Image (cartoon, rainbow, N blue to C red; front, side, top):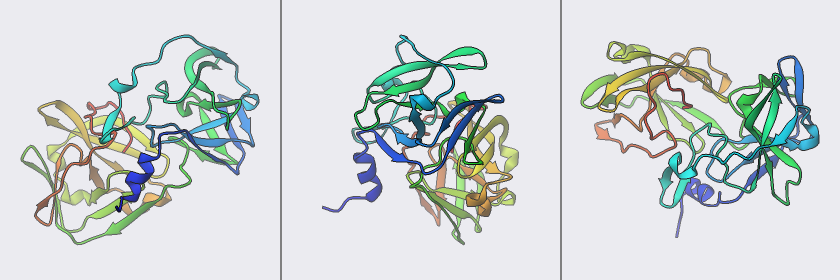
Length: 286
């Protein structure tokens, strides 16, 4: 029986995945080098779409020590994306789905609990997974890494189209365009990006949210009032990275929370780690 490739990849993601990096990896705490490794790996724990860096403990120059605080409950924060498969939204570093030991890291002269995780895995002996946001700056060779480690198997494609796209929220028209672009990103729902002149920005609320994507850049948000309260609903990249240049200044909506009508056909809402509404100003990663 045939099977969708994306579902097959997710379905086999029930073990820790890892891929060696060919570059020198460094992390900085202020002006101090906290991590310096030529043996780094990108790792994906089961239930995560976004990878983390892992390095041998000897390559961590910042102090490390065990902690004994129990982690949050995985089921309270994960989202079922296919029957029997739950995924975590970005962040939530303290939720781990493989054996190991939580560690505190000495950052800025203080011990920060739960910012590292020592793996108990025979294929990665002595490796420590590090929370990306715990450090001020990361470099792969001399190039900055932002948002989270880049997935070596991920790609972004943007296609211009003349299809008729309407965006509605609880029956209210938010946008309508005959000149949208479709952004397709590995393992994520496709996103329709619309020219700003085709969006009824007067129906949107300003939001303080600003997030970063390792592949697309920094996003600014708008919100909308719903029965669940005011939630962040759409975003734009004003100064995107190279992969997202074709959608510069265009606006995309969370199709998990609004109605997308393409050529008169209502599209089903995808189930993803972003299916839970994010309050205005709450922060997220599209």
